[in-house]
Length: 119
Ligand SMILES: Cc1cc2nc3c(=O)[nH]c(=O)nc-3n(C[C@H](O)[C@H](O)[C@H](O)COP(=O)(O)O)c2cc1C
View 1 (cartoon, rainbow, N blue to C red):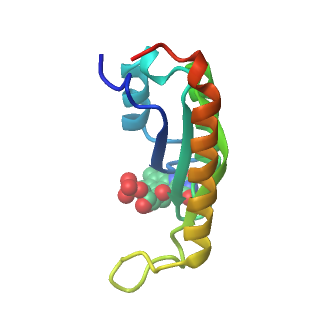
View 2 (tube, rainbow, N blue to C red; view 1 turned 30 degrees about the vertical axis):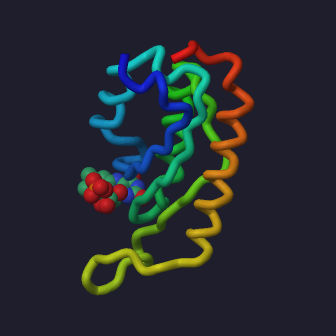
């Protein structure tokens, strides 16, 4: 079974019309046991909201699959985050947010380990 040996996830996801994308929903729906009792961190991006609304929506789905969403997250407001070439401008605050989110994902993964199906 794929992914059973993976102990945590980070979804990098855009926001479309206040929601998350259909391909990501399809990927989530494709698996079941593989998601259970594993944490998920979010790196979201979007023009106006940085994907914040999409993250709130996806929490209802991932918790249905017994995933534990990390509260700490990375939020990229694309308007202002891109240079003239469309490349992401480095941002120390974003780097710090990523470290905090990844730390929380690691803690949650360790805390949930005893609940997971052995790989
Ligand atoms: C149809 C459409 C709807 C969008 N809706 C939102 C939105 O609700 N909130 C937001 O922040 N950005 C929104 N955007 C901007 C996208 O998040 C942005 O273009 C992002 O780069 C798309 O990610 P992708 O290129 O990886 O698919 C929308 C873009 C499109 C084309």
